[in-house]
Length: 117
Image (cartoon, rainbow, N blue to C red; front, side, top):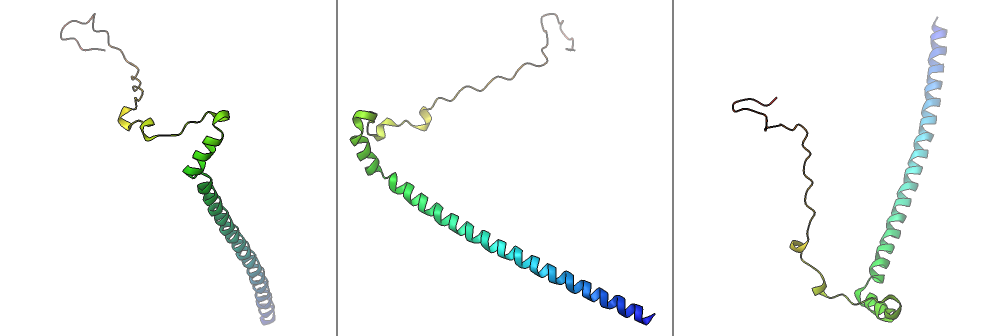
């Protein structure tokens, strides 16, 4: 009986060792994948910073003004002036929609003191 317990215990230890070995390698694989994703995110942030800097460089007001002057005959673009813009209080917003009448009450046929149905 003792030998059966020893064999089962040894098999249990071997099984747990095999499970721990597999879990260790699975964990290492996930950690490597996480490191790759972090590196990819850092590279994406760097690319985004370069794109934002390039966008800011290309949208400089003096450069856009020069381009508008160079291409005036083809594009017919005029320079912007501060007096061309309106104030927020000058904007006309659309009137809100009226709510539909869902349960009308006919008051022409009611006598004084009656309750509507």
